[in-house]
Image 1: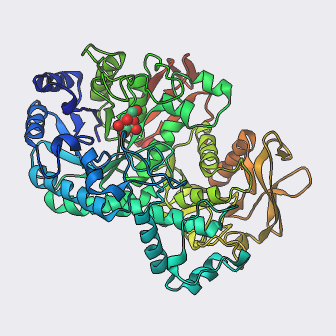
Image 2: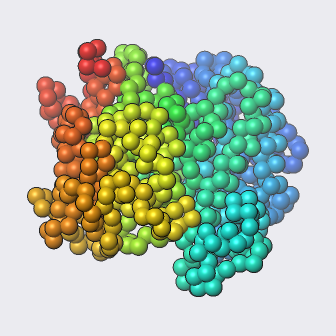
Image 3: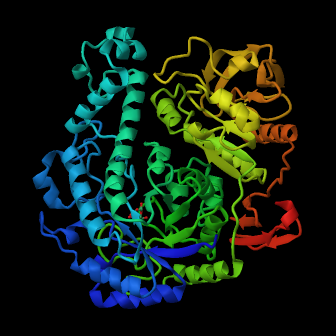
Length: 637
Ligand code: GAL
């Protein structure tokens, strides 16, 4: 596959006479894709029923006839003001019962049937008009589901839908009471109509109630997306996609992805480093202008799985953003590095956000490839350089990674409902495992629980997977060695401790006798090096103890094909465990110097240097903020 570049463009922000000039300049920069339309509802329909598509016809023609392929967005993330007059109840409501107001974006409730109908209506109008337009090469549905904390809504419409969802799931109120253990604290219900949201309770609500609400809320996003998919499918033959976000786990992206053709995501490395990553100050300072060396790759690999192998970066940070607490500029070379790194992970397209910086509105301080007055911003030259690099590079052939991590959105919801210790966070745990594999120079795939067993891996990790069910059996088909733990199989679908003991552990002949969580700075050391933090399970049983805590209890227990790790490892312990697993499964490790990362494809070995300084590795010298592609000889692959 040969990767391409693109850009996000807002014709409605610029005088019409600019459109053709902008398009020519995009082509001259080496861009071949442009995304438009995703926020332009108030221009398509300024008042209810007053359809104004002429300007969009001309914009599509100007961009398309210049040679650009267009991704057309449905504008449903930004319902115009008149929608509120028409559907006053369409607003999402926060956990305190306050309706979210008009004046920014994503203010709708996923469960409002009237709003869903409006979205279907506009999608259908657009599909009929542009579904077979030769310039439209893909459709984006909505924009960044879940961004700005918008998955959960406590509206009347959501409550009605939640009660229906519960009644479909449990069939009878007795079954729900039993499944949730509502005998505890006399929480039993007499009918589904009595059930409220799990908010505003005196002390914590039943975690089973919370988990059900989280599952429901995720299903509402899936249904909302599918409503537009069902409208557009018959009207077009080109791919349908959505642009997901970084570290948004509030809905199951795999479920949404199953209805789409391509997964895309929006990558803002410097914004994410300061805004949504736990790391010490030294780390944040070292990568202030580069972003974290694993955060982008993590999402590339995750969204590759969400897209069943097909994925893009829809929005690539091109310079300083406006929304993080501080917004430093990328070091020279980083815009190119991020773009090429995405390609190394299999991106079909990397598209920059945005073409020209907006001179008005909330994002007027957000860089584009051009300044607001149309001069080249620093990102433009790097985009051009990337286009040249891609042309020189030729085809990058994808390969399955030797190691996979099972990623399970519902585990995040479960552990957020009952963390048990403030330091236990699902993303943090999975990310620590991912980092460890990457420090070892391994390429990583993610797999949703439902697809475990479809492909074979040397090693599969399942950190924190809350409900194991039949995954235990499928894991054994899916790999040579499965590394379970910590906190795996610890609850049932309905948030109860499994009566028959934990799945996974039975097969290992071991069990958990006690669980403790630890405050920051306290750890349990492991003989020979490393320790666990946040979460410790005290194990017993006849399975072999492969590592021990200082008190002699197992810190890693295992048999031939299944190991259990009973705590949240620090870096040293992760590295030890990965090295032991590699030895067991015949995996070759390539320990990486700080800030250097390696990605293997069938055709290339790629080295990505997030450091500002050069790094020597093997026979290579990799400059600071640079990427090197080394061709693999065919026998290696
Ligand atoms: C994304 C969003 C864009 C723009 C961008 C700014 O989250 O999809 O519309 O707001 O962030 O960084």
